[in-house]
Every structure is written in structure tokens, then in C-alpha cells.
Length: 254
Image (cartoon, rainbow, N blue to C red; front, side):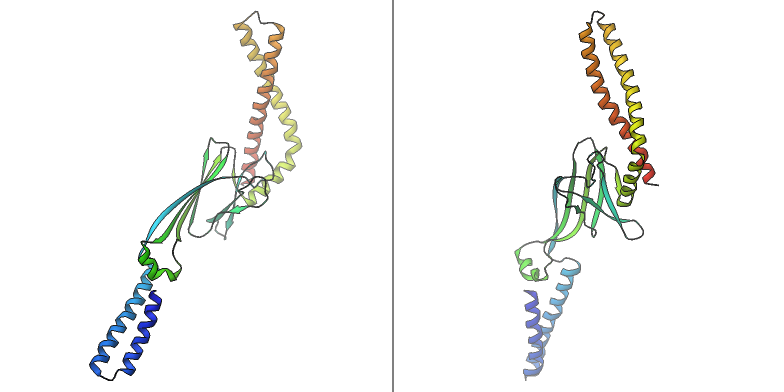
């Protein structure tokens, strides 16, 4: 609307200066038209630079996100450095675990944060602050500028499980290479590590159970042994994998 007013004021100024014969009337009409022109331009500039007639609102959304890692046993949150100084980065993730399509955070007007949680699922919370018009009157006058709901700033917060490392795409590629190189030795060492830990755990558990109940039958002892073995194997396998992955991640980050 204000654009049309500006156009009309410019036309009116031209007409006043060239077609009105009486000097007093010409000066008055020209002055009024010129004031409208200057005022319209000033308001347009204020709307563009200072967001005149607008206010900020913040919208919050949350969604579950998934790792782009090809290995389900090695989930991670990846980012890609933009530029040479490494200060700007975009984070890469998937919105659907069963699809290959990836998504990434925005670069401009964006702050990214990563926090670890005890949850099993990763999630992304987006807080987007936008400029919107204060009311329909301002929207009518300045809406032609197309800046309604313009983004002022975004804050993306990733909440990831503790077993999700945060790596650059370069570090992730290096990590995958290290895992492949050490796969055979890791498997061999894992077997030794888990076997020793499980044996000690079963021995201590059975000893404690017999002290508590000396009359425990062989069948009960076997049942306890099998249960303890299964639980301990799962526990120490995960423990070994976590320890080795941490070492490899440290190497990948060097």
C-alpha cells in the first residue's frame, strides 16, 4: 500500500510543479506531495532496516532425529565445516531412520548447540524467532515488502544419547577407516576381555549366592550361572566396544 502511496505522491509532486499555474497553490501542493514522498521513503527504510511496525515472536518445534551413520552400532551426530576457519558449521541428520535422505541445519542467522542426555533417542529442538507485523494495518501498508515472518534468528539444540559422538564429516570418514583397519584385532581382544570379565563375574555371583544359600541345588546353580553369563556377556561386550570406540574417536580427532 505504501508503495502505491509513494507512486501517487511522486506523480502529484510532478503535476503540482508543472501544471498548477497559481504559485501559492503550486507551492502548497508541491510541499505536501514532497512531504508524503519523503515520509513514505523514510517509513519504507525504517521498515526494511529497523522493522518498523513489526514485533518478534518465537516458535518452538521438536522432532526425533536419526544418525546418518551407515552403521547402527556406531550412531553419531555429524557436522560439516563451512569456510576455512571452522567457525561456521552445519549439522547433518536424518528425519526418517528408514530413508537415505538427509537434512541439515541452516547456516545463516543460526546457532547450533549439542547436549547429551540419558535418553535412547536423539531429538532436535528448534527455536525460531521471526519478525511479524503487529497488526493488519501495518501488514496492509508494508506487507508488499514480503518481510512478514522473516527469520531473525534460529537456535537448534540437539539432544543426543551419551553414546553418540559429535564428529565432523572428515573425522567420521577417518573413524570408519580406523574401525575397518582394527576390526580383526578388536574382535580378538573383545573375546578375551569379555571372557575374563564374565568368568570373574559368574564366580563372584555364584560364591555370594552359595554363602547366602549353602543348600542351593546344582540345577539352581546352573540356572544362576546361565543367567549371570548372559547378562555379563551383554554388559561387558558393550563396555569393551564403548572403550575401543572412544580410543578410535580420539585418534580420528587428531
